[in-house]
Amino acid sequence: MIVVYGNYGEMLVNERNGRVIRYTPSDEGSDYADIVRVDLKEFALAYPGETHSHIDIVDIGFWTNTGEYCAPEPIYRATVVRDSEITLEKPTEFRFFTPDGDIFHEFVDPEAGTEVPEQLAMFMEMHNAIRFQPLG
Image 1 (spheres, one colour):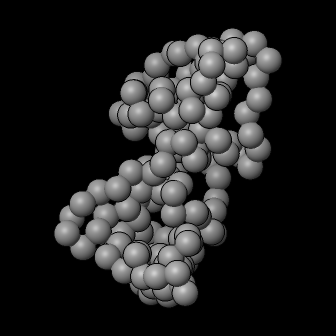
Image 2 (cartoon, rainbow, N blue to C red):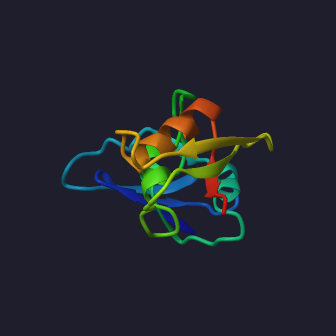
C-alpha cells in the first residue's frame, strides 16, 4: 500500500491500480474526499526506478469522483528534485521529458529575473513534461 498525504489528510492507496482504499481527513478539512484514484503510471515515469511508500498529494496526479483529472504541481517537482533544491550559477540546458517519450531542450538562467524553480515549472507546463534533467 501507498500513503498519499497532504494538508487535508491521508489516503491509503492500492499500489497496483492507484485506487483509494481509505481516506482519513485531517482537522483542516476533508478536501480529498472526492479523490478516487491516483496516477501511479505518470508518477513512475516521473521517478523511474524509484520506490515510494509516501507521496505528497502535490507530487501525483489524481482523478475525482466526477472524472476530473488534476495534474501534479509543476512548481513542486521543479523545486524538489530528489529531495534537494536546484541551484545554478550559470545558464544551464535542461531536458524535459513528456509521458509520450518526447524530449524538449530549454535553457534555465539564474540571472533571468525569475527564480530557477519557476522557470523549470514554466517549461514543464509548456511541454506537458513529467520530469526534467540538467545537462552537463
